[in-house]
Amino acid sequence: MYTTLRMYVRWQSRKRTTPASGGQGKRPGRHDAHIYTRPRSLEHDVHWAAIVVENVRVGGKPTQRHLAYLGSISESAIAMLAQRCWFWDRVKQRLDRLANRISPDQRQQIESAIATKVPCPTNSEYNRCVRVREALLGRR
Image (cartoon, rainbow, N blue to C red; front, side):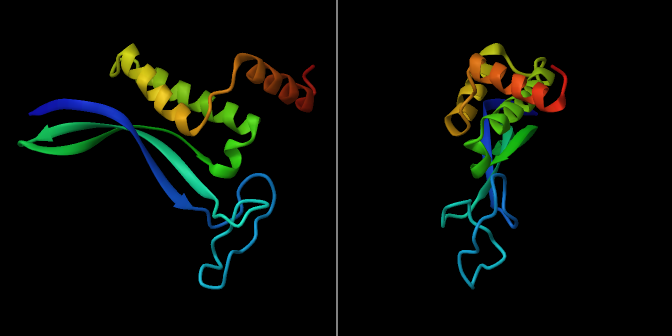
């Protein structure tokens, strides 16, 4: 028997093995030469994945149940508007698919938790990003 306790976003991280968006990074040192840093930085580039989980009790013991993978983005890509727009498009699509399993309040909490790590673009930023994409694709 399942008893739902709490739903939240769990962030999983891993170091990038190749340079991420925005140009080539530097190899930080000999001991971890297969890991690349963020462009123009000596810090490692980290890939973040957002996953919705809920705490449940199974047989009286607490455990996490995976509900949905929402999306992923690297730290170097967070600084790029187009990458943030793409990330949020995917997150909102996946949250729409969860509409029958989560309440509007829970969705708002999930979105605000994600926005602490990946800022959500404003409407004007999003529209500017769409205009640039359409111009690059020759649709306007």
